[in-house]
Length: 277
Image (cartoon, rainbow, N blue to C red; front, side, top):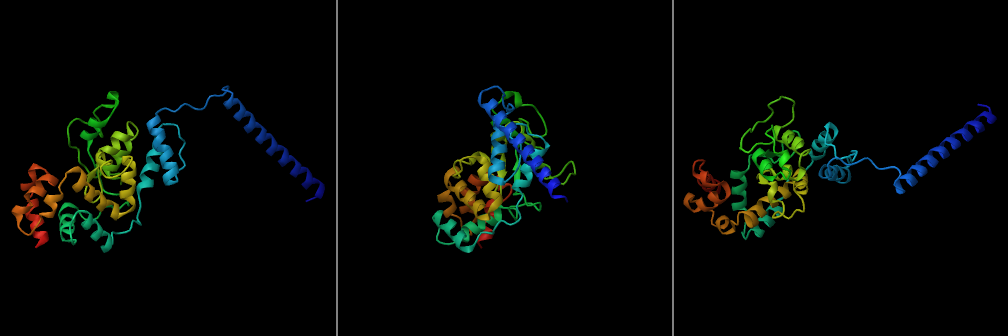
């Protein structure tokens, strides 16, 4: 290329860059002066989640408070994690000690009986169970209480992948409910290996249920800590936990407190005894 032409093109690029910089600076001055108003946020709660996903999970969402396809996809992608470390023997023993026990026999028995295998789905998303009646209860805007796939005053609708799109239905319901009331939605899922409800986030030491769900996605230890905190701070079952033994009758109090009044129908007290045998 001729040297004179190259110099001329370089000057053109510099002029274009300077023009762009001046335009940005002018826009910033107009915004500061109130002459150009920023794009209004449609839903501040949704915008908060979008910011959280950008800052905590490295997403690149437009923070506009609109919970559309891109936000739902980013949410699902952010919580799918296939490299969560398994709990170690030392960590499990520490959990047992924090429950007042001397070894891991009881906590391992509870884990065997009260969990359904891994704390993650094959997709890498942590196991959750979405409770549509909980969302109905927790939602703050009465106008959002409209019977739908993810909102209902009655419990039920427990499906795995009813629309055959490859997304676990509990996660899909949660992703849609997030667009209506994120806090209510996150409080309405049972989380992880031991299915601790998001509504118990404060008793489990979290500032927000999204942090509780995030922790469960990243670590099996976190899921065991939720079990510990449920026993200690939610159900107040420490004495009943320490009474667990190979004798089914001594396990009734814990089974009733952890599984509810129908514990006997599913023989949880007997299963705990078998796990400790």
